[in-house]
Image 1 (cartoon, helix red, strand yellow):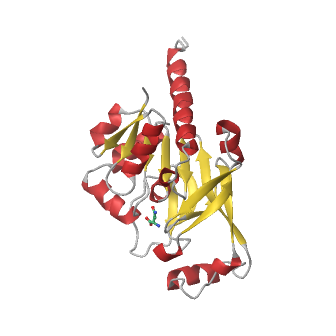
Image 2: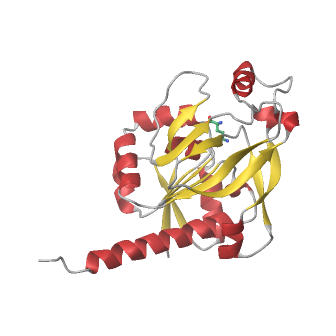
Image 3: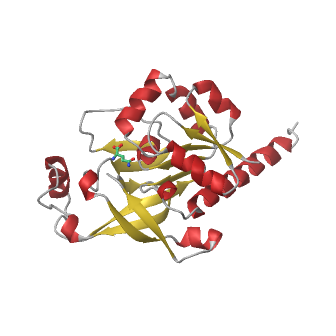
Length: 242
Ligand code: GLN
């Protein structure tokens, strides 16, 4: 049976493990750097990225997490996990924080506002539907969700979201969010942001598939991990050129 590691410092790691179980895949909780050597793929869950970063720092996990990503092992970040994987994050309320990096994206940590502005939306994800079948859309649950504002050329956009103008400069937006939108050229108009991407071994979603009964994203990640694992083992069988 395939085994997937789930970073279990904080946030929705139990829900990811339960979603994997529904697919017949074992999820193991990861809390220590040495445990990363025992798994071939990793999910970084949603939660609160500053808290998660503090805990990861306390457990000395950053070097091992960076190495895991740089070695090309499959990693999926959801929400705070997406923030962790981005090369650049903006919108921090409490100053800088450590990121694992690897994903050539700039994220806004709290793009969609605070807890009260959390929402659900049907997303069109052609890549997911072509690989996993099922309904034409995926119901994204966005909780204090981040968004990707810029993505590099290597990044494959899997889903975007057209932000309704009603969400822009709303009276309950925080000062920080208002400043962000004022800074945007098109602040008064509808604006599209990226909410799901893949860059080689990295998958990232701004929403929470582990909170739905729809296991297509988990299945997609498990298949992606198997493919990457097969490629790695077949390339290590190629005889060295002499
Ligand atoms: N915006 C949150 C953060 O900064 C992430 C929210 C989530 O993971 N649900 O960490």
